[in-house]
Length: 94
Length: 465
Image (cartoon, rainbow over all chains, first blue to last red; front, side, top):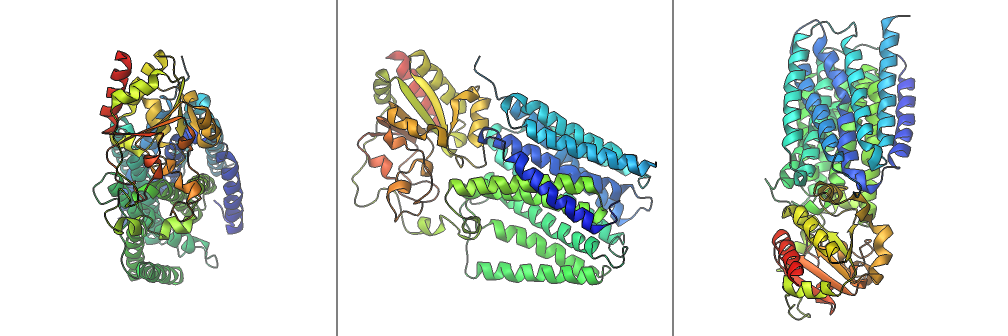
């Protein structure tokens, strides 16, 4: 998809900047949920896992892809759910 | 327009959802919806990938997703809030190994040979395996330390850094071999082995109290590993999302290091605490007299004339699962007209924000949880500072004694309060093995005991007075 490696590098560097600015706004109060939530986002590697497992030819790569899907899914599902559970506990004074 | 274009648009949409999701995490009010947005972003990315023409076999995929979701749901719903640092360490590790597997699969499929003239794919495969492997085994060690399956103290031995350097060079050498000849399976095996060993060896010399930095850094690595797979697959969505996480981990690591007045290098290679702990049976320093222990009833008498209190929680509160008892103590104090707030040091606990989550779980309203910089000047006008299971983060030696190992570290100025109460199991120094002069001050009352039992006893004593 990204035929040009230069484009990929450009995207990488610019998104690092976006990341720094966006994340610097998160207060220390929410650092644990930020960490588990961003952790879940790193499960985006599931996209790669799906591609690896979904290719037509069965073989070692498929099984590596299967294992990758399992781990990445735990990462995503577990990460988002536990973040949701934690954030639900932050309440204002009633 | 073809379907590839729409798949690209979907990845872009998911990246935008991630960014908005994190933005909404900057306030407790909007954070739940922010997390949900990010989860939707993930769903969009997964669906878009499944619609990709390259994906033709769905059995394996569905099986993997079902197994992974089941494990994820169980983990997320069963985990105790005190065990969140372990949970995050483990999830980091899973992200890391997933990226390692993706990069390996691509290598074995011959993905590194395509794209003649462009080194970027084989180099990214190498980095994906290296970072993914280090993230995985490093996270497993961090998990084992936090779960107390292994000693939390730094493990050091002679020539540690030299050995790590040699292994890193071997890993890079095998990486270069793979880049030049992607079919060289010996080099692939060597790269896997060295990455795994490197992850273990770089985390074992780091002590339990430095875990907030390690977890943040591993979080960053798991993002960078995902980023590397993005370069392997030429997928912009992966690159963007991975670098967001990479940036998050780097920022949190820096905040944690600043809060300890130490450099990242010092945390990673300093084996902090090992030397001090080995210096002998620390505890009561020779020039200081014995410390008088007070009872919860003594504390109740002091609270009887107090108008304001600041509670300083630390790792000891988490270990004793005392957050609910502490909340009850807060309720009792407030019903007796004492204004109560909590002072949260950035590195209190075992991960960034650990104390906030525990107190939120116990239904302490988050407005009462105040950051160090915002509350530090208030101690001087406060009647009672109550320290529960914290030590180094309230050590005045960090301000006053330039021979102290933690000199220069920003600390909570509890000693400026009219009365200081410290609930602690014993006089043993904290994790870093550093003596704390606070315990010997005239206005300090040491109340020895487990955080949970003592907080409860204190609440009862105040009720009865």
